[in-house]
Length: 346
Image (cartoon, rainbow, N blue to C red; front, side, top):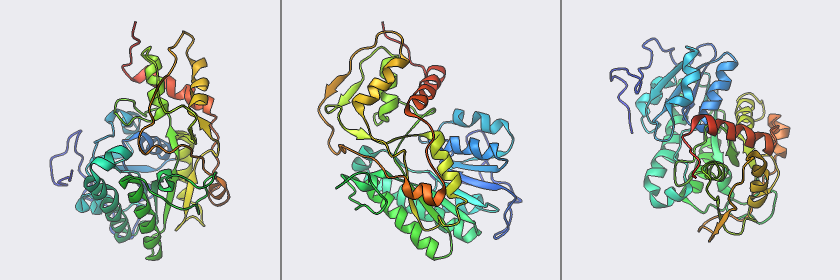
């Protein structure tokens, strides 16, 4: 997954500029987004470009997609480098002249982390430390990294505040705890780092074409194909769904809030929605008859209930999710209908 930074440039592999700024001198308004071709990262890239920044993207395209960056590339203010955060040479060059780093590159599937914990550790732990060290050496002003609500495991009580006990149930969750600890250490060493615990993020560009697809796009895609959504368990389990556009705002605020460095913040709506209620909210989006859901046994490791407390993010970052579930579902469905090859079965 490493990249030779001296290889010929092509659409699949971009060279860093030879005149990158030296350590300690920031190119005006230049930021780096690792994982910037992914679901959340590409929305963040769009938002940064809309605010006038120049953006560098480092992504190995293992789960990211070039089409997510089509609008960004058209601006002429984004550089896309195909490569891995496991490649320290690439990171050292990519960091030069950068003001902020948004670190979203990761292996993200909980069940897969159980099957291949070594590969997950290499990317999610070692890769993150290499991002932080490269940022520190380059004199970056601040790093904002993506953590996960998976760190909480099965909660003792709800809603979940940031001081709740951490009970990881998978290698992925343990790796995110390690990321948060490294964020605190590097902040102590002089690199301001902020960690955001993302709850159940959904929205356009999230794809259903993998066995670990998030529940919202999995349900919507089944109904778009005229098939029954599959509910694992009885449907009473709850999640705190937060729209991707709101999550982007949390990243932007975390990059600038004076008291944020060294902190960990929930990114959530603070509202519990059961899977049955989620299906009920989706049903009006389909004017034709859709099949009733099918129920399957609960999957091992599934958490019955999850809801975050957004208070700290509101008070320190000035962040509060604004998008209603109904609005977010409409936006997600519209994107899926326009961009994904989902044909309704007859």
